[in-house]
Length: 427
Image (cartoon, rainbow, N blue to C red; front, side):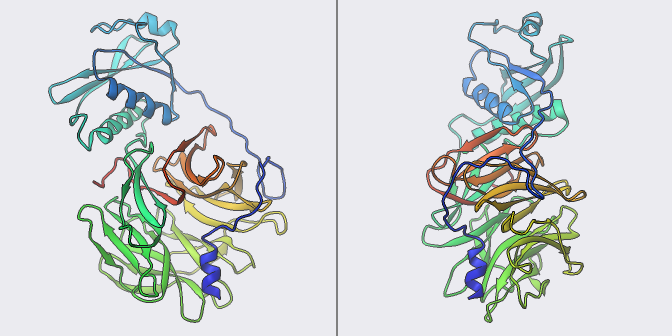
């Protein structure tokens, strides 16, 4: 019975839907975004490389770091001389110039105000028909973002998602959807390793649910030590990649969090004792010292935290009994300052961010059912699942401006997890 309860926490029951409006109620904080000033950037015209420019323009727009200005064809010469005065008139602060090179392209970042080249770098690019072409251009985009902001963009990152009980890898712009697990297997809870080399997930097999470690380079999967029997789910890697925390439902029906050394395949440890409650969905803080998780000990699922050895357990996300419902799917932000999760409001899950230090909340969504948030490595963007378009799809929100976009995938999507590193390491 309790095993069914634990699994039920992962699958949201259907309920009547209506558009949600922000209402101040207890711990709730309405959706209030104050957009900062974004520098204006223009992609300078040139001969050829239309596909490269199209991807760059889209990536730089999706970075939410710039106001990317449209430039009509013929509005500027495509020769070697940049008409800085024209672009100043258009209001541009930066211009990105892409030119062909023997091994790929040379990219220049122009400071329009001073009329100088601020950065210049050659980038190798494979042929446009090669499988790695788009990802190579994404890396160029991320470097341009770093030149201006000091932090790389997230275009060259990937997500892992579930569609039709199968794990898929997908680029951050929704392209290159690639299956990871066989169609013959039913899997749950896919998650990236910190180095992007592995995906861990639960595989339902012979009445049990072992956790598998899938090597993306070789395609081979092996069972994680200590998960050979019973039902094991919601795995999460420690920041150094050596430990894996997960939930286990035992033969008596209880659900608790365990940790295992996946590097040495040893040393299984039990971190919670859920004699009268279920504990699941662990997520490590970026320093590895704390774990946030879901527990039913207050009656409904809520977000708790503990030391990585299981001590010092406490309620992390305060809730207003009767006004706010179950809270699920926590994920610690890359800077350790916040935890994202979803919480039921008027029987519909909505995405929240908890500021760990102040215990203050920000509600990010209000339309439809929104769940399972996951952080981009820049700590600024969140991906989550929403049915606002009519079926469950991945949406990405910029937490600073509230700007939102959809990744249009072919099937209904569940349980996204964003890769933890800048630049896609996996093949």
